[in-house]
Image (cartoon, rainbow, N blue to C red; front, side):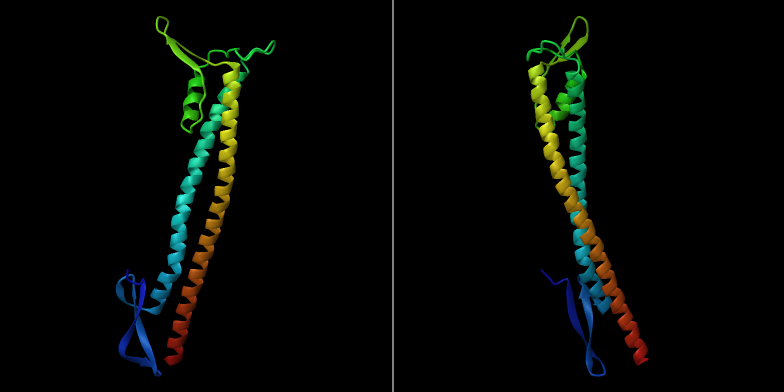
Length: 194
């Protein structure tokens, strides 16, 4: 693999006895020192920016997962409110709620199982979706655990994302300062020679 920047002596060129160079930057010959410095300085910033894009997508996916699991939990809580409050039995069933199928499907996307009874009475065209108190409580615990776990991971990823943003900003700032100083030095040198 070729070097990103190569220093090339300029034949017969010297200023006050100091040999002069041109640079090959990313395979393009004839570049000056500022171009070489710029390429090197901004390479880190660009690499961080690429990692930042990947982390941003991870955070978006985690937020989508939390939203889906939150929707499932809201449906489960609504179903729980339909259970009888006196003489509670684990086999008590919820009211018919087609939205339980939505909760089951959203949770299943993330490996969480919600056991419901789901069928259609063909003659009447009525869809029946309900579950037992036992299954509902198990589902609530499983979904809550998945939400808590995802929330913790989201917090860690958000900290990492913020760190990358800070590193990227610092890297661009540092690269910009270096290039500005190199250009100022070149202008000053040319002014002193002229």
